[in-house]
Length: 165
Length: 267
Image (tube, rainbow over all chains, first blue to last red; front, top):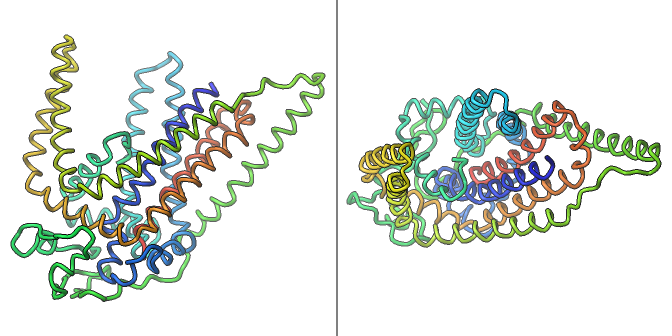
């Protein structure tokens, strides 16, 4: 049991480490580019002023918002992993499979909205719920096609192993 | 109406409708002789005409969602206390049993493989970063075509192996992929321009990559601490407690991941 858990976590770690790097690249069109675009002088060096400022804000003013969104995803993911272990038993396999699928969809949906919401958090210093509302407003105003195009775009780029997008 | 500042299509695609961002490292304004005026709305709905050098929106110096930050920090206390009490009660139990300790787990091989996997993942990530930087636009097209062709290959493999379900699913995926590719093909230059712009920004701020690796090391450290420090306690934990451990493990990972995200997005 312990070894199985360990291997699962090992796999999760690889996925996480890959997404750390992808997280740096993929949100940039709406992220650091914001500073880089409007104030290039502040974001054109190795450890630029924009990066330092952003780092301080993320670990102080916006840390609560990060913890809030992360908790929601962690809760759903923990439920899903628990269900994965439950699949080792022979009871109600079909039901467990469907539940796991639903949880996976919910997890991906929350994770996807979170990524947009945290762009608002990073750019405007909003709290998590307000940022989430703004994301929904954005999708409603600009159309879901745009977001789905981005989703597809990110999925293609991260297809080899990282299934978080 | 509230929108984030956006890159107008005219800028992304160039004056002639084609993408003319020539240099991967150049700031897009440099390709328009610094005369481009970007019209956008700020978060409060005010129309902005922004030119190079304009400042971004000033953020309020106010802590947000403080409760969750405190909860996150406090949740380590019961975690550590449980691990400590659990290990001390194990020792007491072992002493009462005449020194027969619980079967210990040899973590050496696991640690070795964890390190190998971590190094490989760092290498792969660096390679993919470099690959995306060098061939951004080609990569987008190849990826789209590859995903469609891969569905076709699955369908063919299903037919050849006599697996009807696999062939039907492959064919359906191929058909959907073809429709999707034909629908978005004309938008690929826009996507490629977006990606190129993003990669130019990353090149201008290579510190972002260092931050990403730093947080990856932190995540690696947390995984190590979790299993080496709490592994024995987890073995004897009941399911509700185990669930809480899982939440804690993922919570810390998500916080690290989203912190990188916010750092990238922030100003």
